[in-house]
Image (tube, helix red, strand yellow):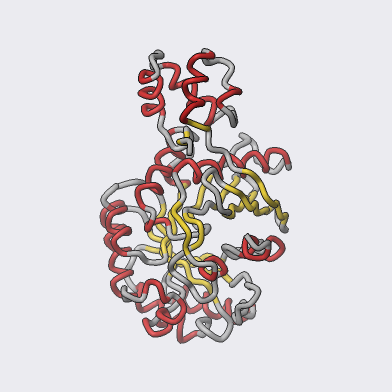
Length: 347
């Protein structure tokens, strides 16, 4: 199996060129070709010497994915089902806004956490993605958006969220490599990158010590440990108190406000009393809460909340002085719940 050029930094590509007996600047040329010019094959690198191309082609490939399916949604949103370089299938989402374009990427094939309302966990965990397979998702989504004339002025993906299939902090080194490449090679600002975790505490503390200016989003989905263990069985070893304390540490180390994500499930976790308990847990913390009405998943018995219940939940938090946003539901037409399109197509 060939190694991937995607996932290698500018400096690593320079070293690769020197290893092949070429000048360092040839590595810089490769970086420009694969990260900024959309070159997908070694054979297409016509500005490299033929001998160097032949040397590369023996052991390396660029690492681009194949699009299996594209599903369009409302509000200039789409999902792609991809076959990445090392096989299996994953999902990525593109979301166009007025002045920016955001890409949601996966970090694993499947997921080991097994959240009871999530389609990804139903298929189990298969493997971690390589850094190049994560970067490829951003490149591929950007290319689809370009063809569909969905990119804003400036014409590129400007924001990336690690909120797709898998737990990013359980594929830590690869996630960090991808984050740094997005910043250095695709020129996406750290403050425009969000890494989401279901509450994997060792990863949160480790990420805090990187002192990056990215946004950390921690998914809670419950305001007491009994309910959280039922909804998020794969993280039952950590209490909500411990998870929130890790979030406090992240803010202390980085100065970056933490986002707490909360998926609203009708009749399960959307009551005013749940909101009050959540407010008490977050009291005094520099954070904000992102409320996410459920994207229904076929075969799961959960439903999104009524609009009035979601509004009441939000009001309780706001009355407690906690900043709140509510994610717009743009994904129903594209099976936007993580893993849903992959599951629907039997991938």
